[in-house]
Image 1 (cartoon, helix red, strand yellow):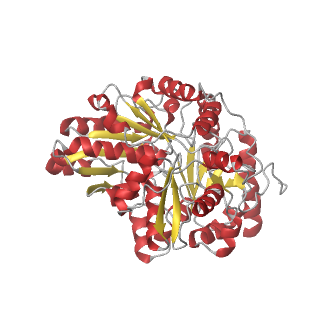
Image 2 (cartoon, helix red, strand yellow; image 1 turned 90 degrees about the vertical axis):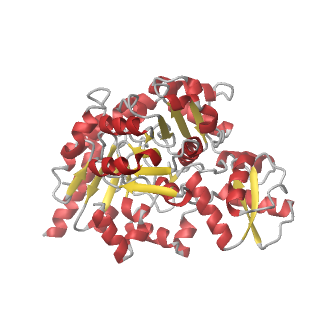
Length: 505
């Protein structure tokens, strides 16, 4: 086989999608790039200037903060942190006892925090709760001040109908009323808002324990661990026995269970019939992160009290809008307490909604094409000798649970993870598919999941033991399957087989 590919290497630090200032991902084509990013080396910080906005401050936000420091004559001992709203200022200020929150007169949130430890703690909190200021808002502000000379060239829907398009698409997908849907500035803000709201509601019933069911996305875990006084984690979603035993003892104290269907990154699916039965028995609210499932692959309506979805992923499909959604299920009584569940969330910036409205109209078509590609790719990946294990929704151990939820035969989750025991770095580096954080994109996107999401665990002996306990391999590549020609995707993995064979000779 010729050492050729329809995919070309993407330089480190290039935005994904390419040449898009509002991109939420960035290219990290080698494992060393990922390690350098995690260790924040000066060299990598020069290359990566635009990345996932909850983790890396957008260059427009940095520029705007510098301008506002001069405008308000802020002392150099402080940093300015820009937030999505005045409401967000209240949340952050209350947590960190910041008493200077009314000094800024802007149409968004601004707080000043001491440089160093306090600043880092505030940024980490915002990463978890998702109150990020929109890069498009910053772009408009800077452009009006003539501090930048151009805006991103992109298609935007009419501002008057954009929100309605998004809500209607989600309402149709989830078979729910639009009034039961709330948009938020990020998926994590949707998660935080729901958990905060449920906590307030259930506290009146003497219920204070939050359960994380499954090994979930790292910032969902961070919210559970750091911002709720009483929490319990059950890592294996395929084993409900341990949870059931716990609930027999403590069920009346449990306010909420949050899980992902399927889970990230090992694509496991719980027995939702049994889980729903337990929630009904103990009056527990079940929150399901349906980002992987999407409303077009799985029917989760009989099970979840509340859905949260990161619209940044499959709903957007282009990785250039940060947005989330809360969807209340009218089949369950908690949906009648909308105000408490929606009040923590912020409204996304209008231009983000205009961009999302253009992209979300293709949501179902995109998901179904990705599902078709995923089926073929799973079968193909099992044939490659350099792949030690493939994790997908078709896995024998949990396919029965997944199959019960499928809307139709073409309803495969577009995430596949592969474990590569030997030559992991060489193989990862050699693949020319886009490589960086995020998922749900129309372009196939790879991520060395454990390195990028849990680098702290792979760099300590205790962390390595923990990873082994939860069966999360270090050498894992999460594949977000795109809509490209499936033969071209397969050929890229075949090309690596050719390289692998030559190195084995």
